[in-house]
Structure formats: C-alpha cells, structure tokens
Image (cartoon, rainbow, N blue to C red; front, side):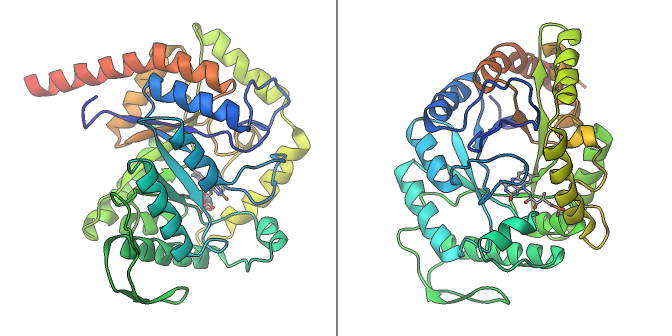
Amino acid sequence: MSQNDIKFAYWVPNVSGGLVVSKIEQRTHWDIDYNRKLAQIAENAGFEYALSQIRFTAGYGAEYQHESVAISHALLASTDKLRVIAAILPGPWHPAVLAKQISTISHLTNGRIAVNIVSGWFRGEFTAIGEQWLEHDERYRRSEEFIDVLRGIWTQDDFTYKGDFYRFHNYSLKPKPLQTPEIFQGGSSRAARDMASRASDWYFTNGNTVEGIKAQVDDIRAKAAANNHQVKVGVNAFIIARDTEEEAKAVLAEIIAKADFDAVNAFGHEVKQAGAASPEGDGNWAKSTFEDLVQYNDGFKTNLIGTPQQIAERIVALKDVGVDLILSGFLHFQEEVAYFGEKVLPLVRELEAQRAAAKAAA
Ligand SMILES: Cc1cc2nc3c(=O)[nH]c(=O)nc-3n(C[C@H](O)[C@H](O)[C@H](O)COP(=O)(O)O)c2cc1C
C-alpha cells in the first residue's frame, strides 16, 4: 500500500441491532467474540482502522452497548496491525481521564489507539445520565477545547490551560503516549467543519453524494489552509457488494421494505432536532429522508451498492474529490468484510495504480 492509497475503516458493531434500523436478517453481533473475530478478518482483508461507537443509552433500538474505550482495547489486544478509534463524548469524559487511559492503551498496543471526539446529538441520553445538555454550537466549543487540551497533555510537560470548560495547571502526563494518537471528529454542521479546519486530524462525515462530499471537502480544506492546519476526510458508506448489481439493489430494497418504522421515525425526530439546532440548520441529518435514516449515518447516500467493479470506481471517484478514508458498514459484517477484501479492495488498488501511472506519464 502506498502513502496515497485511500484507507478503509469499518464500524465496530459494539451496539446491538446492526448498522441498519431494519428487521431484515443481519448476521452480526455486538458481543466480544464476534467483534474479536471480525477485527482479525478486517485486518487480514486490508482494513487499516476500526471505529467504535459510544452510546450511554439507546436512541433507535440499539438496546445494548459496550463501552468504546474498553472494547477498543480488547480489539487491539486481539490484532497486530489494526488501528482502533475509540469514540468519546466530552461531558461524560474529562480530558485528563481520557488522556491517561489512552496513553496507557498506547503503551499496551504499540501506539495503535486513536480517538473520535463526538459532540452528541441525543438530548435524552444526556438527561438520562444527568449530564448538562449544551446548545449545538456550545457543544462544539467544548469539543474543540477538549481536543486542544488532549493534544496539549499528550505533547507538553507543565501543561497549563485556561478555557471556558477546562483548566489545567502545570500538568505533566507520565508516561506520554508512544506516539500522539490521531484525533478524529464526527459531525458536518458549520460548527463541526470549523472545528475540523482548526483542531482535528480527521473529519468524519455522514454518507453523501460525490458532489455533497466535494462541497464539504473544498470548504474545510480552504478554511484549514487559511489556518495553516491539515485535516483528512473520512466518509461513511453502507456497502452492499454483490456479484451482480441486481442482487445488491435487491438487498437495499429489502432493508428499506423491512425498516423498523417506529424506531426510524423516533431516531429521525431526535436527529432532525439536533441538526436543525445548529444556527445554519445544516447539521448531519438536516436533509435526510426516511430511507436515508434507515442507515443511521446516511450510509446509502454514498451509493457503494453494486458490483465490486462499480463500487471500486465510485470509491476512486470519492478519492478524486479529496476523500482519504471510507468508513464502512455492512449487513453481515464478517462475511462481507472478507468479501470486500477479496473482491473490491484489489480493484480499488488497481484503479489507483492506473491513475498514478497515467499521472506520471503526463
Ligand atoms: C462517522 C461518525 C461517527 C459518529 N459516532 C458517534 C458516536 O459513536 N456516538 C455519538 O453520540 N455520536 C456520534 N456521531 C455524531 C456526531 O458526533 C455529531 O453529534 C453528529 O454528527 C451531529 O453533528 P452536526 O449536527 O453538528 O453535523 C458520529 C458522527 C459521525 C459522522
């Protein structure tokens, strides 16, 4: 793999119910045995990252949820190369606790741990655990301080910080992580993009069309350049790769036909409020239809649904507009991650090599 190759991550199914809110059969499980095996299959298949999810309570039927840092460590302990990204909610986590936890895991796992700072969309979750629910842009202001503080603790001695949310006085974390963990973030509102253009290493966004993604990439990269900051972009996609396009489309149709109507609508109600709550009204799910919401991060919109060749071409088209990573979800995780590694990934690498050769010859 070359430095410029597009990277692949998969969603760790550490919450029950699978990645689509549908009563279709999903051969996946949230328990540790299933997840350990999946992590091993994924690293052998060529996936570089796994992304865990954090939920303190269910929003759409995901009734059981393993905690993200603990499960990330368990998956790192059962793999050799995979990097695992632990999802973190500022509020419940204090940055000093997280910095220390992650530093220890970095030492235990040869530096393969990363974090995804999520800003929260589910008010009921915060209420349930007695956490204060901040307004949309205030959540991002807190997340950005959280990221600044994490980076400070991980890289400096005698770290001092006086923010609106966090304060540190001559604090020296020992040991520091083996290498500074990569900091991802989730969200696509104006506030989320501005945070990415200043603070995060990676910007994760919901599924979208190539044009929709390009608009975000251009926007963030222009702002990041003005801030002298570099940020990479990861896009969510629910991948349905089958030998024929008809089969793949039939699977999508069945997922939608068997959608859990009440759960999707309840989720839609929560996230529409969260998206509309951003001042420009353009948060992650602001334009999502019922069908989009059946995959809770708009993963169908990216349209990685078809034959291996079609999917590989669409992935390279995303790379062409500046995407660095595809975050993938699957219906039957273990089988489909293996199929992806065998059938789709080699085609992606072939197309990338052809493009690189054409560029060199030009
Ligand atoms: C790839 C990705 C992963 C996310 N993972 C989580 C998560 O595990 N837990 C959570 O509460 N929110 C998660 N979020 C939600 C975001 O942190 C954020 O609250 C949401 O996208 C709303 O953002 P916006 O309205 O500001 O665009 C994730 C978002 C994305 C794009």
